Length: 91
Image (cartoon, rainbow, N blue to C red; front, side, top):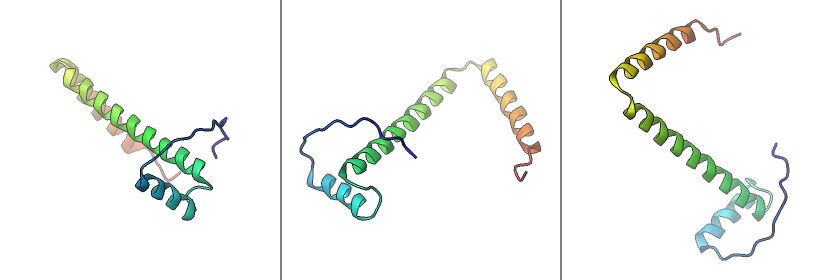
């Protein structure tokens, strides 16, 4: 459960469809109130941004590798994969 963060009052104007979406979150039980609906929506957007940044940075890392580094990475990938096959996830 998220610990309540300090709150700041804001006043803004939003698009009609944005308000409808936030109100839907509240009415459907996805949020307790408009403030929580905004907080949840912003958390999701931040998470999506982080995933996108990680994906972009990972792709850039692998594109920048030279041939010997690619070979080394492939060897590490195979070794980790083999070890993962030995793990009993049912325990």
